[in-house]
Image (cartoon, rainbow, N blue to C red; front, side, top):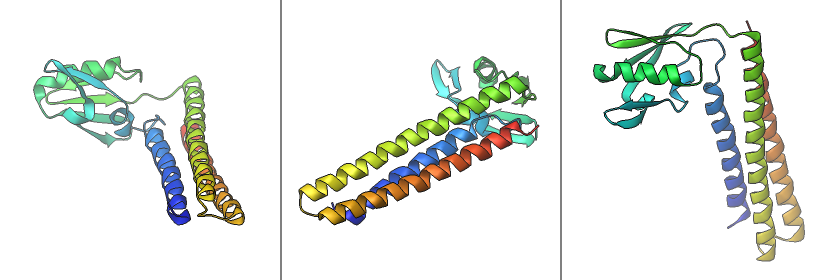
Length: 188
């Protein structure tokens, strides 16, 4: 492995950390209706004698700011989907109508908002832990390249400095996304 390839691998791993965090943040409820609210969570529907993910058996849309619409591919699964949404830990109360399910999104209480902020901070910290793991992998790669005489002593130090700069850059991105999500959540 050459140093450029190793740096690319470290940066790719860090980019994936931030992307995953953004995916997780999409499922955090901010008071607005977003299909990601129930799409990204593991809402499992017991239908046809098997367990399926909600997004694999229905289309989820947001026709209004405080309403989600779930349209099953097969109308026979409507009741099963309604039950699965009701039983998930989001506190939602879906209502079946004809061939779709309407899911009103209630206002968040102050206490619930604070709980969500704690969850955002926890998700951000988990992402930082993954970043540090990618940093460690990069530094280990530098040591290995040094041992194989691919890098000199100065080359290793330069490589480790580059890895640290990437770590700082992506840590800052994570913190910015967490602050933005927190501000969005606390907006009434």
